[in-house]
Image 1 (cartoon, rainbow, N blue to C red):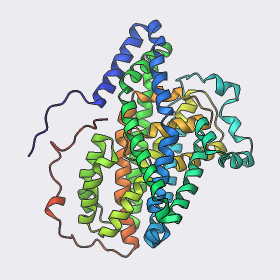
Image 2 (image 1 turned 135 degrees about the vertical axis):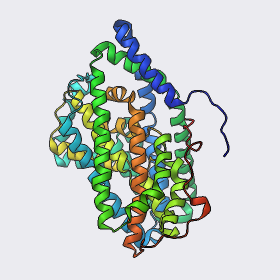
Image 3 (image 1 turned 45 degrees about the vertical axis):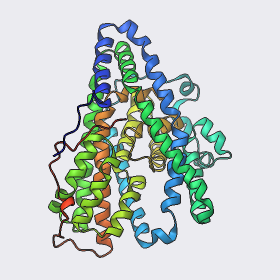
Image 4 (image 1 turned 120 degrees about the horizontal axis):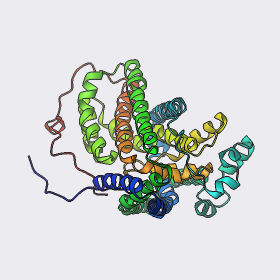
Length: 428
């Protein structure tokens, strides 16, 4: 077994160190700590700068690459149908959990001036006609400048479909979008290097202003997320496994290694190669695995969509904003659309959450409160994303008439190895 060279502290370690240091500084020096909120503000502004180009690049490249009707065919249609059903259930599980436990109550998060002037989130629920009209952009440049996430998504979906229809003539445009998404992934990594300072400033300011009692709400938030994700995995995905007659023990044996890789690195892409291998070894035909699994990385983010529903309502509760049930449904639709195409990047859900909060006039400062414990939540949601996508390949295979009654011959390289020495921390 090869050994890796010793490295310095990982980004995760630095973020956790910033979290602890910020809590301690805020508790001991509450006055000066409040002024350190500037560090968190800078980090949040950098996060917001990612939203428009990342969404546009990833969605257009993803749709143009997999949205061709001839390529998708019957299997693609079944996969998309399954994806949308399961992610919708995940959203409602998150929504139900956050409304039941209400982890944001007691945080007393201050809303920004813009939110107060516009009357908060209730302003978005004026009428269905206004919401529908506002969904469609008049100018993509204006939408990007204003951070109108729904408008960017609608434009990207139509633009990507047009690229797929044009075919070879659009290759230059699609290649540009692919390059743009890669650049923005790297840009995100650079921004995350500032995360430890942002966490330190945000936590110091929060504890200095609100007191140490605010930490109880963060623990409540993490516990609510893990409980909701566990319910989704064991109940929702368990029911799917039973209905589709997928052998649970063999499935778990083949999926546990990529699951652990995804959990430890908080990156779905880190687990993709082994997931492809192991699901093929499980008995899913290669043409289904190679198509459905990557497609799920854009359209089937069960863990992330559940988290986004929970986190968005947590911020609303923390800000003391009452969100009508109808508006919550519109928010769920927004999250369902904007969560497509951003898997594989650690803490990419923060970008989507920032855009959704801005769209519904909820204070983006809520991200600073969540950020300190986001690593723990990111590991959970990413591993559930991976698990859900692995199950999706088996479901589509079963839908296509594949049986899993006999154990297929496992290739030597697909045999589950010891995970010690394999799991590595993400460099960015």
